[in-house]
Image 1 (tube, rainbow, N blue to C red):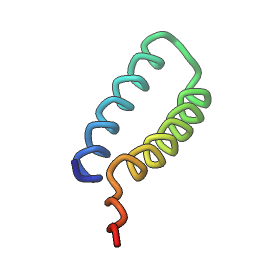
Image 2: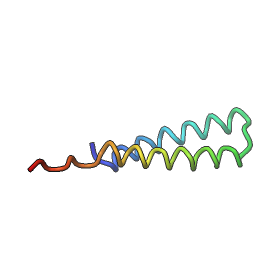
Image 3: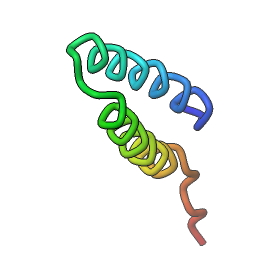
Image 4: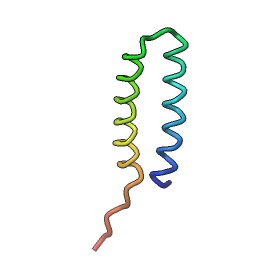
Length: 57
């Protein structure tokens, strides 16, 4: 799976989480903080899962 596809899916997931938090009445500052933290986590996990395997010698 490519990193771009993983990131697009994660951004859709993150948008749903942010929308749910705003609908639940969570202050925007906390929604922004949670979004930035989850975005960073998504980038880290996406890079780890989609990186190429090291060639065997």
